[in-house]
Length: 405
Image 1 (spheres, one colour):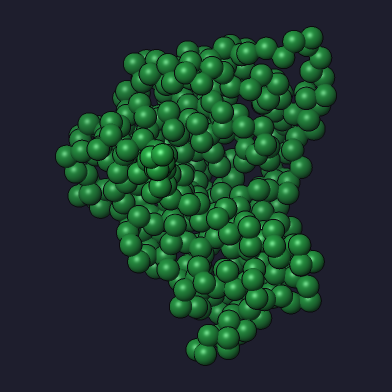
Image 2 (cartoon, helix red, strand yellow; image 1 turned 135 degrees about the vertical axis):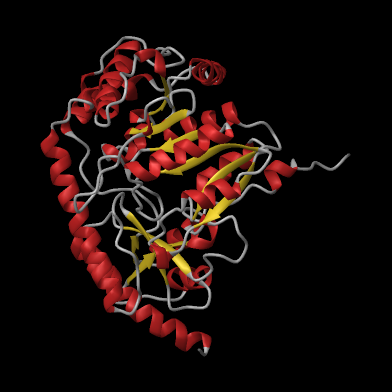
């Protein structure tokens, strides 16, 4: 009988640095340890009550398909939201026909890459980057070309470095703002400079804006939807997961005024049939969430950020203070962050507790980069973050002793 072989695409698919240590965390919990999960962007913030109530109210006799691009009433309500976002910078209105509702922001990202790049083309990113950019590019036979940003510069992106990195097969620029994993927020001048480069070189600009509301210290997160004369290039990726602390709802959106690209995304949507029916009703209710909810959430994340940054610096870990989102990338005082993260879960505890981090090497495309860095998500309350920092401080000493450093 002939042997079975995986495709090269399947065999070489990159493992998620965010989730691949999960079996070690499960084993630690089975040993009775409390594991503080700073590896994943799963907030403990309460989902808005109106969204939860919408699930309870659903009482249709048949749980039917929705349209492939999502329910029109939901898209119309989303269009009003994005029109407000666009007009913050003087941009044009957004219509329901500019939106495809997707299965989470992840599917929106997959559709955007698939609609802009052919196999063998390149997606331009800045590293460290959200790992799924590389994961979906790999699924589609697309290469990732990276512009490196550095902690010493606050992970800020130089638009001229982007210009010089563009190659003959580069088709799209994909950036998050506010950023995952660094928390960088692109200001309007940076967005306009990058947009000018995309116009000049004929690139799409895929803007991942799922953390739009989470900005601190007076920072603003302008949307590419607000840029003038950029409609054909601009694609926004969005999601309810982080905005409403509803990661399990799996509802996102691809937003573009480029009618041809939107039609391509719709055809991809038709192939997967439809986004979830009940979750769209809940997401539609979430759009009525009052501003006070976000003001309180932003205050809470800012307090968590400040506690984590101060705590890390207090144990000798220098780190940049993020402007937005709820992540930071920190250089650890170890020789190998991946080995240290495994050590935390397999061999270390402090009073029956340990910490789970995401090694940062998987957030880079350039080999060797991020080896001593980790991404930390400040999605736990301040007392648990402070306890996590104490655990890390003790773990650094134990790890150095165990490795003979």
